[in-house]
Length: 487
Ligand code: BG6
Image (tube, rainbow, N blue to C red; front, side, top):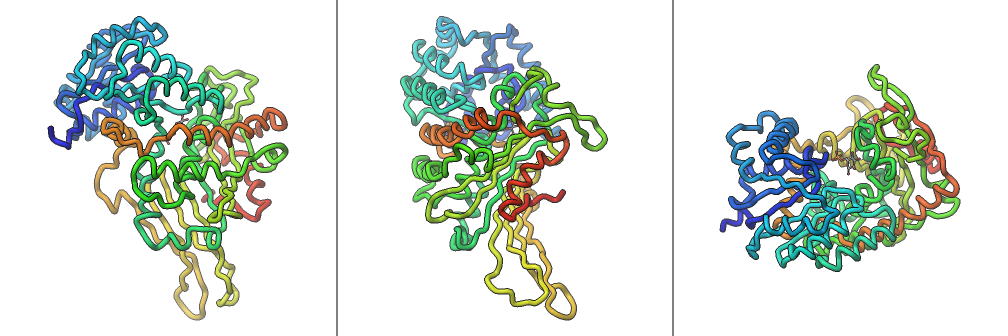
């Protein structure tokens, strides 16, 4: 069969009526179908507890897909052929015996790839895997996809990993971090390892500090019940931000293949200097949004959001200073921050280079060069350079070299889930997290969360619609740095 289609596959989505399935997975599958990346015999089976006739479920999905894909990309004929692949089955994942029904529905063709996508609560991961196994569904072509956060601490993550590992070989476990599927994130790898230009400078001798920000304007929306238990640290920092940090800091892997890439990322996680004891107060900031305004619109306080405890101490913002104890990065602070209900939506990595060693031009305020890799909302790379301003004398001025990907490549940008779903079907785990990476990330994060319980219980308040708590600015000011925002 043509390689273009990959393998014939059964994509089984647990949590088929959930937010992720509706907003991300099914629209991504629609695009893969439209662009002919799915094998003609590939089927999609959504599972959830709710009772729906398959036809009603398809109508529901149609509504969401037409909402989440670009309107120019939604086409009735294409939808009709996509809908033929799509089926729904009511299933209570906590009932082991119900998996026998699933087995009958899937049949026993050993050549079909089976993708079990668990878009459910992490508490259900281990039991679902065990039930799949006891129903005989874990054959040599089966893969399991787990959404983040995996567990809520090192012990819980290890327990889930042990249980999953007892029925799925590690090579078949795809722990997804959708940030790794973003084009702009892969472009970071291309920038670092596809160009000779940056590598000699990519180290402590030339780089002053790095800032990694994932700022959101949305609040917790209708995910309050989950979020109030997770908070920004578990929801974003333990996974997305640490993964970005790994890609910025890791050594060049020998091959672009799963083990080589993941070995290098792991080394960075293991080199992160622990933040413990009173350092938790000095090097981290946790915040929670209170009532505020954006563009004249009133925004609610976190503790008034749906399903959130009114006395909640959960952080909706976290900023911290990380240090990587290795030869390349010793002495270079990595500032990480993420938060909800902020002034601006942007995800970016800023690499701030050091100043020139000698000031040649008098009367200039020295500025270091700055490389900004923007992931969202637009994808771009810009490099600030000092240039001579026109006219007499040698007045220097900062100017920017800008590369905007939508101008450079006039093609639709794939959504992260499209790329990652295809990788799962192909069995390529390069952009997925290995068990030891997840556990190393928890090993670093757990003492911070533990320290917060001891010495930093109440998060700092920040007004919704603002740039976050003032303490996050002071965190950098103490080292003579500032967040590089256009406020
Ligand atoms: C998810 C988090 O993993 O990532 C959400 O659970 C967050 O809280 C989302 O909003 C951000 O992803 P993206 O792709 O919209 O930037």
